[in-house]
Image (cartoon, rainbow, N blue to C red; front, side, top):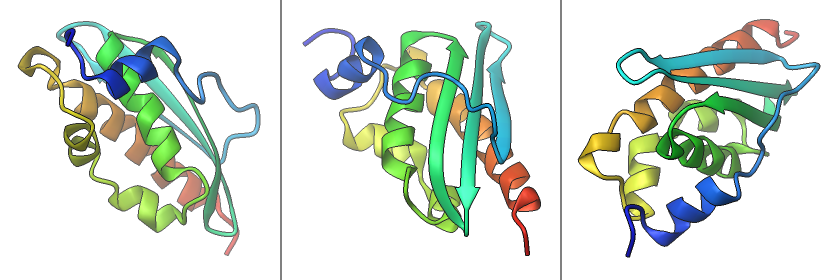
Amino acid sequence: MGLYPEIIADHFKRPRNNGSLKTASGRGRGENAGCGDVLQIDVLVHAGVLSAYRFQAKACSAVIACASMVGEAIQGKPIDSARELDIAQLIEAAGGLPRSKAHAPKVVERALQAALVEAAANEPS
């Protein structure tokens, strides 16, 4: 086995939902100033359901893999379910990350929560 478990390595090599949304309901940014990772997550919410998710990253392989895995886990789910996703637990269930990459789920968490807060504020009542 390499540095990452197979599923996490696959998400880095073939990231899902990479890109941006022109008409995002919410956009969030997560950073790790210590290593220079920057992540932007765009979400589109319709009737309380997360209908689209995209991310752009200038980041390490672990952040890219985590962002990719999160997109698969939350797309099509109610926004409340997306808010409650335990990203660290999702990554741990996939085999975990080396200690040196423990920041990755936190970067994704910050970006996702910011995007979801903005999307909820933009959702018609």
